[in-house]
Length: 231
Image (cartoon, helix red, strand yellow):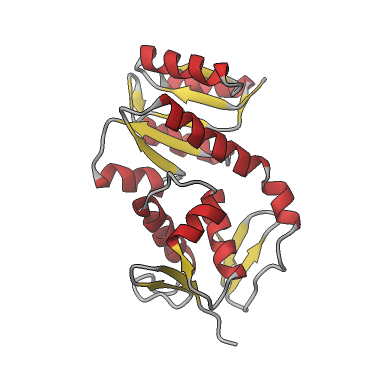
């Protein structure tokens, strides 16, 4: 069965309230309360998005995220009361698309989820309008398969990271501001600088010869980024 959203959270009351609220607004949602229940649910159901807590009764949300990422490329939004930068960096580094702190507003969370669902639902249409894939002999992108190759070797990045890289490439040699990225890539105003910075770092680690001295994705201090291509 297909669902818009799967909530994985061992705080049952919160998970159930969020689930009920989402369903009231036509976002078909289910809730489970452990890693084991999540694994069982995913064997016979297909969510379009996952809301995942870090602390689960039978394990870590981080480990569950890694397992989900092995077979699914759907957006995973971490939702947690843990608010350290280390937790956020880990969550995004292992394949999370965003990190939302508890306590959260149900209305704001619903708006965020709707935006992400709309973005991913429209990805196939957007892909048809993409410009030609990039290939300079070292870095190559494949829009159809959302794949990146460096020196002939495929590098693993998430869908949102591919979309971000592709947008920067489409606007090569031009300053792309952070606000423009939030609007055009994330399509929302909820994404934070911290989330963007982590995804940029992960892309650099995948494509740059020296991520500490990037040649492709250059930071324009306090403004945004520029994908540099020598004409």
